[in-house]
Length: 241
Image (cartoon, rainbow, N blue to C red; front, side):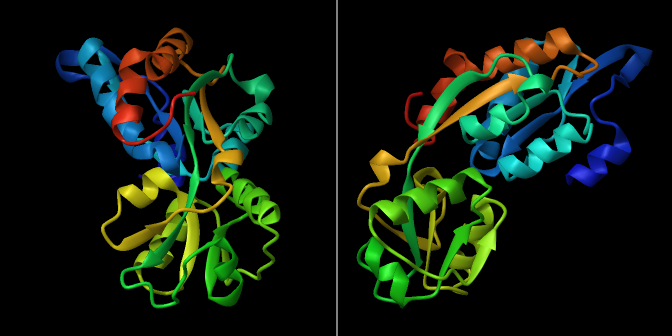
């Protein structure tokens, strides 16, 4: 479901349930790299909370979601792939809670047609990156600078999934994505990037203060950052916060 659809549908508001009972409705806005995990965690939260519906996760780049929150999008919980993006909406959210860490890797299409072996090879092949305002893009810039690598990307994507999709489609020779996204794809090969352990992003979660269900939103944020939520993240390959 797109953010535009949610804006029209008003998913953050309470809706009618069967038999006329009022059910609370919550919407998680999640960075693309964490969206799959958030879907699983949301299902667990619903099972533990009768009368609560968690809507399909809204997934996009963290910076895009932050812009939507500033514009009044009806989200109840915000999951950002890094702390600086969450800090940009500090006055609109509750206290951010640490979730997990994630590091970058190089991904190439199956068969590695560009012959990429290490980070510096990206300068000589067609490479796609996340845009610099997106957490994975900011991390990519830092990683390339550490390696002394200068390149001109063929495109700058607004989410890590955008980068992964182009590599999966064999539209480019390489890209930089989070290790968890690479591990979830069967259409790419993964190459370790020297220095990636020095530019690790830490994901955080917070409730959105304008939520129509503020107590439940805060409870959901705590649940995501709690033992059950972190167990889901660990199973998907995320590092500890």
